[in-house]
Length: 106
View 1 (spheres, rainbow, N blue to C red):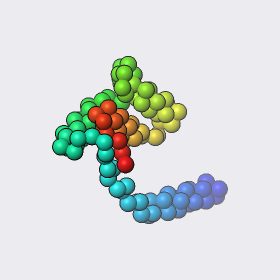
View 2: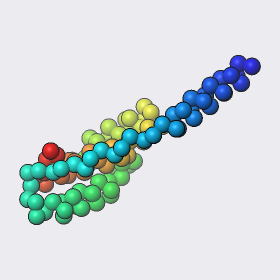
View 3: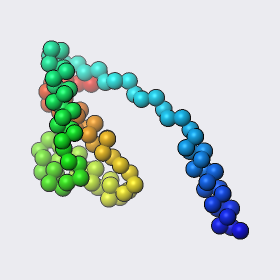
View 4: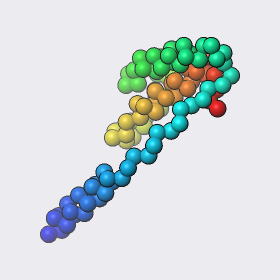
């Protein structure tokens, strides 16, 4: 009887979580400080760089710009294997790349 009650409670909890609406996406980042004529090209290059970085390979740890972010993601993944931090790591790599090109988020 206890297991049936536990399953019912778990099912109700999961259905309540699934029915909550997703929060709206954050507004796009406004970048300042660089040459406005190069913003689109810089964003495209940084997006490509962040997409090509293999966040699952320990060889990326030695990357002088992004190795720390990849190593940190690996540690978080080890401590919580159900947590997918790939999007967060790619966002951090993108921001670091833009910063290297002279851009700062407003």
